[in-house]
Length: 273
Image 1 (cartoon, rainbow, N blue to C red):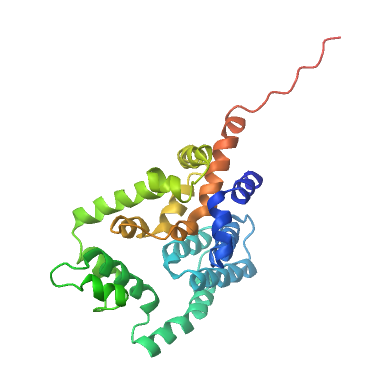
Image 2: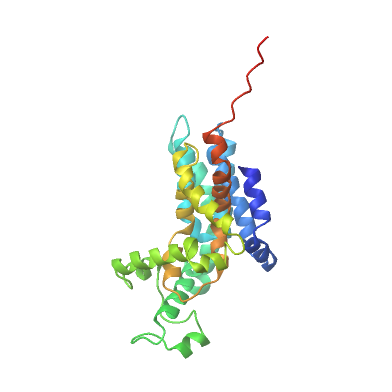
């Protein structure tokens, strides 16, 4: 599976085009795959737990919205310990927190909000969604400063600015744009319809395998509120899809190899004497 996923990654038009932009997502992809390797490791030692905590901190420092994925990964490592006690949990969590604490402190000292690096992007999405609406900034103001306006938080933007019906509708629209619609074929899946179909088929087929059934969950956790945010916008930077691209390529590889797993070749019969 790994070799097939590496091949589809190396030959994907979208990923090749994005690789020259100097983005952090190549590093991020390596970090989350290494963290998953530690989650699935059969042997459990305090050194591996410490490494997982440090790696989780690097994942968060590279892309802070990965909190849900990191929390589940560390919790899964903790549950796989034969004997579980608070010291082991601290060994997983404290290194991650220590690595990202300076970032929060800098945000607090500079902007007055420890989560400013996340919340300022929510202001950007809010401004673009409601530009020109009563009580909101005009298009001219948004064009001049897209990150301006009153402060907001993830909770406020999702559950106070929008109704539950909007939350569901925009999320469905965002998922369609990422995985199915014409926009998907023009961005991440550009140039290869077969790869597009293999990714979608793999996300379904892996649900029926013991070791693969968590793959769609990893995709959901890394996406977070991204489908909703993209559903609220007229357009978006396709680099945002890059974050969970390793799992899409693994899903495509799963679909390619599924017939071999489901119907393994039988050994030839020995000729009769």
